[in-house]
Length: 173
Image 1 (cartoon, rainbow, N blue to C red):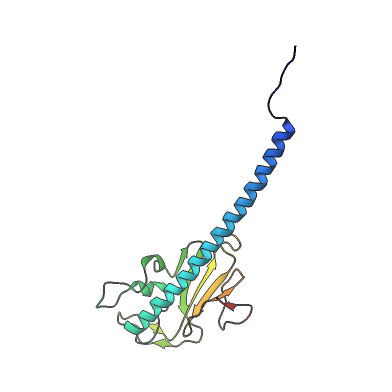
Image 2 (image 1 turned 45 degrees about the horizontal axis):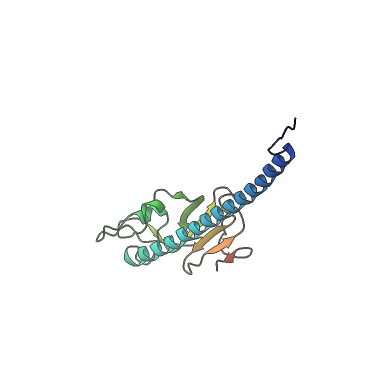
């Protein structure tokens, strides 16, 4: 009697499982890199939005000066219903957005300015920064910007570049 056996041997199954494991780990690494890059892009976008909001605030309500924190930019000028920044960036003094902490403070060495059109104190300069919640997982770079140049600086570190911006921080290209 000839008995015919069909199917895979244990060794063949183990080889297939090992190959699938390697492919899955490579795909996971690609997804993590893509997520990190997306989070970094969101952080850069947030700083650009804050810069734009500060410019509008300074020219329309701040009397040439800037807001000291994000919550101030949630207000709007008396003659407009639109706030200077959207609610997702102004809910608190430090917000969490796409795996990054974002904050706004007065620039180092700035002076206190007059109250704005809403009666809130201003300052002569601002410093906005963004750094990853979990360095290496949610992002691999930290960012910062300040007045008057409003260029965004980056650093491959867990904390954002500090003023004055010097190496190892670099201008974002």
